[in-house]
Length: 486
Image 1 (tube, rainbow, N blue to C red):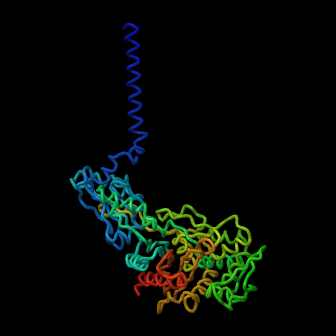
Image 2 (cartoon, rainbow, N blue to C red):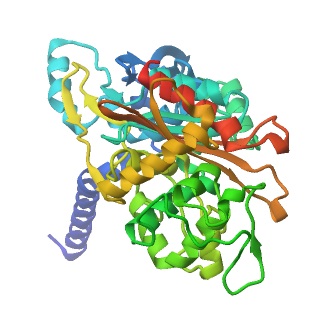
Image 3 (cartoon, one colour):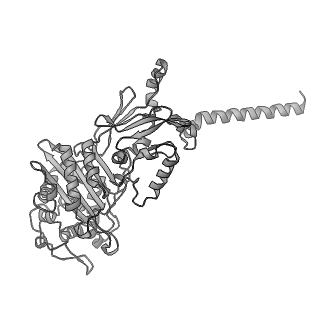
């Protein structure tokens, strides 16, 4: 072979070698990345080529699939009571991908998860049509309905938890949207999506999990827990040395109570919770100091950006850099303190569970299309913010709030209920309507099956009528009744 031909042959060989390397690189190294690439249309086509598996509540599907004439897509997602369940399911759209449970468990729901390989192989050999698996939630349908209907046309959210396990029982957000309206490829569905994005009320935003609010006086439960745990207070009925008004440390600024409460001066911890004394809790926070308050708050879940339910919750915040007067304000749920409804439900749940906080979760099982369980969630302890003894003291004080304090609207005959109201200021010089909060738990002879947090962000109520006891407590009562079947 002459020299020019040899060079051509070598060059062609190198090209073939490069091609083989590239093909193998794409097939074996980049395969997973390309398969999940949002620009890979084949992924979407495959996702909607079979009926999507269902999300289950109380043994019943709250989702479905229907055939469609949208070109390459054979099926599209449908939802039952979509507005009510959207904060749980999220959406699955032929155009806009998916989010929340629909996204996290896409492999199970489409039947493409590696754990379904054996089932899919058997179905292929037997000629059975491929279908998706199931995501079985911990949600309680009656509690969810009570939460959603309780919010009504108000803007706000509800989270409810089983304190002993951490299982999420309700997760409502208002205003909401119906994921069915954006599931397909039609022009109308595209317009629906754009309207949702532009809506200033943010109906697609999951307020129960992702939105943080000033918790106001509901945070006083955390401050009380810190005072008990760090030995600042031992007897919840002993008088404190709190003046009224209380001057914030190193300032001339008065911290006042919301309305005339003569019992706040030198008020005990129980009395301060009962009538929600800013002065008592502001002084407790300043006396405790930033580090002790933050330590207890973090045991309840604050400042944790990795709380997965499995949908990741927003980070609730307590400042780690505040000075003494700011610590006093934080102790009453103001300054930079912010919490999700889920976080405040966790606070109530930990108190109700004798001081033990369980990891919140909303998926109980993952099932194959043949209903075999392929993954089961086991309850897991997250932390111990309170000793059992101190938790029981705090339970007693919170029960007084409902028996004869600001939370009487949450009473349930024949049931022990503990709670705490909150009316959180917001806006420059408190110029906007405050947030109305209520956190609570219900107890039976067998323990506490439910803890609830409700926040009403906005409503038709006049500013003077906005209160946690008036707006949020009745919603919490309905949710607790639904769980208790009262």
